[in-house]
Image (cartoon, rainbow, N blue to C red):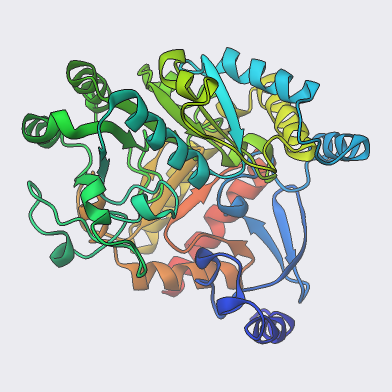
Length: 431
């Protein structure tokens, strides 16, 4: 068994100064307690107790090139030496915007922010301004940040959610304003018939439909054939803004995001995570018609830290490597090998995992369902069994995300993939 004593001592110390001992809610769910790390290199991460992990969390997705990529670190060092933050424009910001405009189908105009939550908030504000409507349609289990108006419909049990054709908008947090659930209409995903019915009743109220083009945050569920195209058609008929939240899919599924992969162009989109290899940045982007209110100052978007030199430099370097080395294609190939291997050894071990996703990111979990197509289906996953699996993998030197999402990076080698598969077999046999 690994020794976690130093991490335990630091966590107890942290609980005396940090609320919950962590800086983000999602960092609390580690066993036997949140761990403290000292370094990351390539596909490996080292904690304060000297334990080294083969890492498939990749800091919840941003580290698409792996830990401490030398080209990214060099670019950040040079940019920081020139100046950290100008509160004004600089050349690399313009160069990054031009690169993104070239790569992303909907990117006629862009604005940089720091986080996906901020950018999601801004695109919903834009949609309201352009349409003159107040509500938006979102899907159960999709994650669009932690701000108030999107903290409805993120989770809940089957009893909480109510009937499929008239779901209850479940609050995700205490402290939300009164009536916040009336800002959005929540539906199960991958069901165009329900979307059509909702628009028949509420179409003149809906400013936007916002969706993860792949439901990454719960189950890594791909859209069913025709679903995204159907959303595009419905929005066109009703004058509603279609928004893709590509914070996870962006630059992993392809340089143009999932909108390139699936051939459906939204009106507005949000990117983040893999864009800058772990440095804080996001981008809200869209067609000129929908971005023009920001350009004219009619819709306010601001931020003191926006376009800071280190983050812009990190994004430029990351995009350069992604494009030059055709990283999205290699991620897909590596991920598919890992998915197939995990499925095979889980069958042989007698604890079959359901594996689904696109390769660059995918989900693993224990369920008897023959298909998982929306958030309600994910509630059938045996979460205690998967938690036991995650602990077993961690104790054998492989770090995973507890909710079942796996990320693959450019730094993962063929030997890393083989090690993960072999270790999973050992853990599953021991369960």
